Amino acid sequence: MIRLAIRVRREEAEVALAELLTLAPGGVEEIDLGDRVEYAVYGAPGELPALPDVEAAVGGALVEVVTTTVDDDWADRWRAFHQPVVIGERLHIRPPWAPARDDLIEVVIDPGQAFGTGAHDTTRLCLELLLQLEPDGPLMDLGCGSGVLAVAAAKLGFGPVHGIDHEQQSIEATHANARANGTMVQATRFDLLRDGPAPSAPTTLANLLCPLLLDAARTGFAVPTPNVLIASGLLTTEADEVAQAFAQRHGFEEHARKETDTWAALLLRRPG
Ligand SMILES: C[S@@+](CC[C@H](N)C(=O)[O-])C[C@H]1O[C@@H](n2cnc3c(N)ncnc32)[C@H](O)[C@@H]1O
View 1: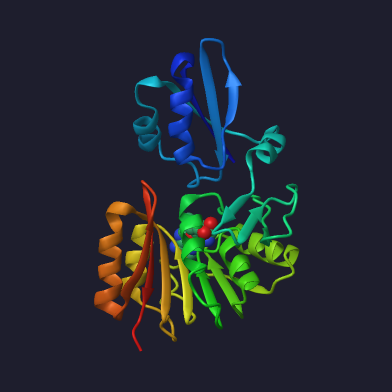
View 2: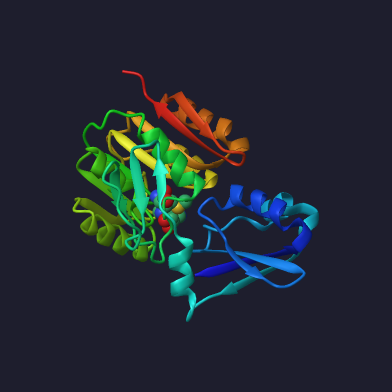
């Protein structure tokens, strides 16, 4: 687990915090350092805001950035840091220690070491697009991480649900989170860069970064080619290139696009 701490001048702290929260909507830890304030976020590698984004957001207020690997005292802070997320007024994604809500579909995710608490924008955008679909039949989650998307899909009524990831800890986390939610998700280890065409189902989710999505567009899918593909993990500047790659090689048409200031997600469909 990594702790990314950003120190800013006290007089500019509130403005800096507002900007930081656009990068870390799950919340930040705050420590008073006298004339400076430290804001910290915790995450698995790859889940934290990128340094250039932090510098751009906090701008002139930034004094120092300190990155540390936390191993002994992170558990309590990690708990305080992870707050529930509501998606589309339907899904309530929460860590096991947060209280349940009986008016929403509950998805309980133990953040563990795998990517995917539900709070990251790439996951949120993917879930918002998933909510636009009529839950129907088999679903594949490429790069399942903690299993948050796969478990949410199973709760919404997709099935059977399968996830793949190249990290063993993601497979274990997905199985554990699926069990904890009373859902059936089969997770298998698979490396999209080495193991051939991407596993697929009629509905396929791919919250991967742009190079992996472009690679998947080139390498193609195992049978069946998805009818619906939700591609997330793209910068807004990369979305057109990815949409075009799937259109040219596989005949997908773009049906919806969701964006934050930084990230984009695409809902792609194959006609017929
Ligand atoms: C952005 S995270 C998404 C996690 C989760 N699906 C979510 O939406 O929160 C991307 C996931 O892709 C996995 N991944 C990265 N490279 C991969 C590869 N070559 N083959 C399979 N999975 C990969 C990572 O381990 C990570 O779990």
